[in-house]
Length: 211
Image (tube, rainbow, N blue to C red; front, side, top):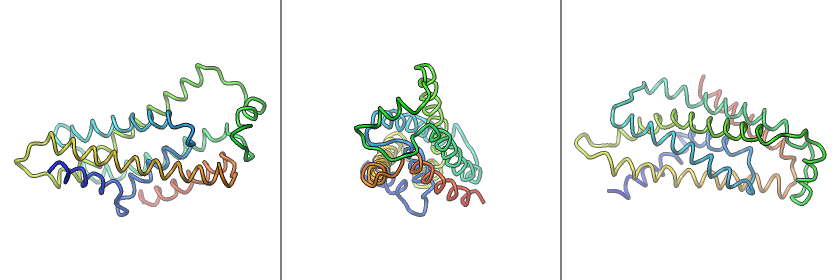
């Protein structure tokens, strides 16, 4: 039974017909590169905490929001994340560069940013991931409750389903980082152009979901 719910959560987040969650994770990670894996780990953890909380509360019928509203809010979180990415990308270098001269280029061409500004930027990013995770948890719960038997204990199915979702999420993150490595690391596409391009694609796609 545990394995069945893990598989259920795994298949749900990777389901091509429900690609809104995939699109959000892609948008969330687009601004990062492989060497930023520690930041991504904290970011994904914040998102996990958010959607785990509302998944549990909604499944226990403590929180109840209409499915149509949730379906509208999820693509909006994607659009807002893409806008944030585009804004942050303005501080990235215009030209392709190797990993060896990356820091030198930043030091010479970007305005100085103090540690307090960096901390505020990081906290804002994690705050977005946590807040938007709360909304995505409601989306997971609508599917989960439909699969859960009426008289069944919710604890183990909920935990197992969430594990499956996280496993699927890890795959999306790895694929996204592989693409960034290919384009930015191998093909030497400017990181700014790559980030803005992927964000715009995700934004247009999410806008279509809202309409």
